[in-house]
Image (cartoon, rainbow, N blue to C red; front, side, top):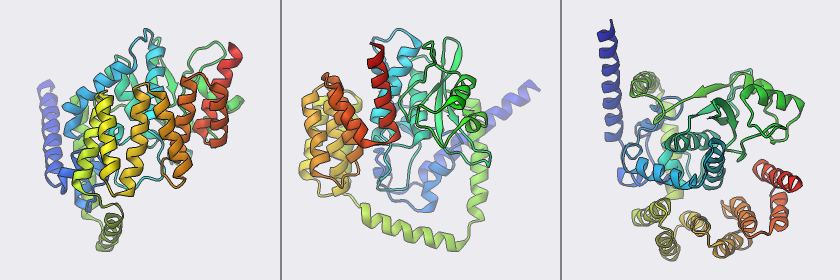
Length: 393
């Protein structure tokens, strides 16, 4: 029986890998997609990497196994440098993810690859993607972490957080809010404790999410923090499900999708050379070569005629200056985005980062004015935490 089970597991893994290979082979425009930037326009069949990925956002992109993994692991270790406690490391990663994987609601394309390397490289994502990035980076620095997907009573999932093991217990971590919630004793909440906290009142701007969503929640563990056996079984199951789904799709839906893809292609067409230059800049920043990144971003801004790419390159340039601790330069870039480009998709993020640069230079009250003016749940929680810290001191 043991041999049979081992054989079954090996078969599942092989089939999963074959499925992944097949997925990569059918990808058109691979020269664009491979650089990790999300402007590739794809037909239905080429969207298989997203729809065949097992629930929980298992990364199947080759960069997740090779160069990308090394890059993210090195970056994660740099983020927690100097932290000696589990909670210190977890909070440092939460802070980094919340600032570098911005909640971007006005993205130029609906095609999203849930590979953690791509999520980090593009610099924006939804709550589940932010939780996935955090859990992956936490794994690389020796912490045990996972995603926590919340569900309403009707089965709909309105939000995803993360959980991280601190002092031997699973604790709540909100990447979307940028906080590891703590009780009156200064201890991070377990899920049960956090449910009790929400019953008393919501101070983390989670409403209308409440205790019932946490009681219905399910935890997810994905690659690279589950075994190859589990990955193989999930891939096989997912591919079988999706192949059945694709085969039963109607021709009418295909024509509609093709039409929308055509409209999207016209809207976000960007020269490959521009994307490759931008990708080099992103790689340099993630490799912590900030001077090179700033130089390459400047080249993109000077040469590209794509408003979408210019918009993103300007914000990324500000983030590179922030990462290099050149807060004066970062502040100027973020302020320029907010004051001179009100239509920028990165306006809110630029204002938030303006506040962060002010905090770094000791101008906390000025930062609070900006955070209050933004009014998003993330900025409200950030302002609450700062004021709470000031009252303690």
